[in-house]
Amino acid sequence: MQQRQLGPGGPAVSAVGIGAMSFAGFYGPATEEESHAVLAAALDLGIDHIDTANVYGMGLSERIVGSFLARQGKAREGRFRLATKAGITRDAEGRRGFDNSAEHLTAELDASLQRLGVEAVDLYYVHRRDQSIPIEEVAGTLAGFVAAGKIHSFGFSEIAPASLRRAALEHPVAAVQSEYSLQTRSPELGLVQSCEALGASLVAFSPVGRGLLTDSPPTAEAIAASSFLSVNPRFAEPANYAANLKITEGYRKLAAELGTTAAALAIAWLLYRSPTVIAIPGTRSVDHLKELAAGAALKLSAADLDRIEHTLPAGWTHGDRYAEAQWIGPERYC
Image (cartoon, rainbow, N blue to C red; front, side, top):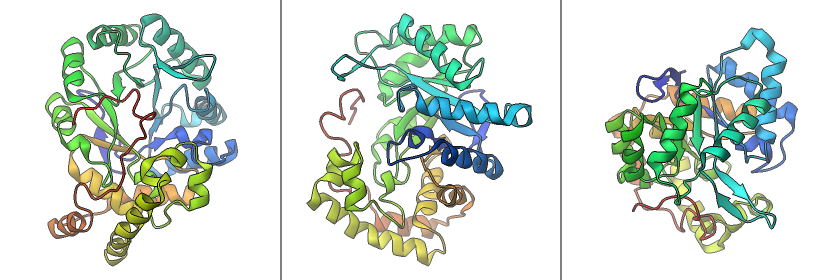
């Protein structure tokens, strides 16, 4: 498995990790045993970066990762680089909010460490920015966790390049997590460049476009059953999804001509974009994980990359990447 450095001066991690949101049933039912099988396969494939969060199933994803680690005991101790996140809240009516206060982040970090069964995590993200608190102050809080030995580094999810630069003046930022794929290329308008300049990793979630950049795109039934896809403009609006399916047929044919799968090609393309990129696809399937991991080993020529660009040029996707409610929290910068 290809390795990449996690943040300035940080450790080497696998270029393909696992986004553990899928363990909490976000894209469909997932049992603990199925999730454990994916984690076991990850170790066999050389995948060591696992990304979870306190809100994935209200702690369920973290508990599943923790129970896997507990089952392994000393035999596989320390073989995963663990990342988790906090900062999203829910009120009594279920409405989403954000809290980046030192008190909240401290309490949530302690709870996450307990669920994971570890004394420290390698990477701790602020999941969404609380705009009422200067990001410099939040970076200071996170730097305190580093000094206390509870985390080894920190990052932010879905922030703008300008916010990254402000935070980095307070303390080196190890990573920024953002959606990035052949389907969503907005990070190329400043975030990729800022990460490269500061030595931060760009951890790309949804690298296969929430299934659209695979050989088996989501069915209408799968879209309807997903709390996210069922309201997302690229999937939920029939005209948009029909157009996106039609366009990506050419991409799937190209992948077959290149002797690989659409998912593996999407991962390979992404890793070629910048040495700062680490991809964290989510999956509930061992076979799919093997397919995704294969992308890290693909060698693409300049001609191959040109063909991909011609087939799926920037801006090809129909529909916004988020619905208006889904846009609450992520920072828009372009």
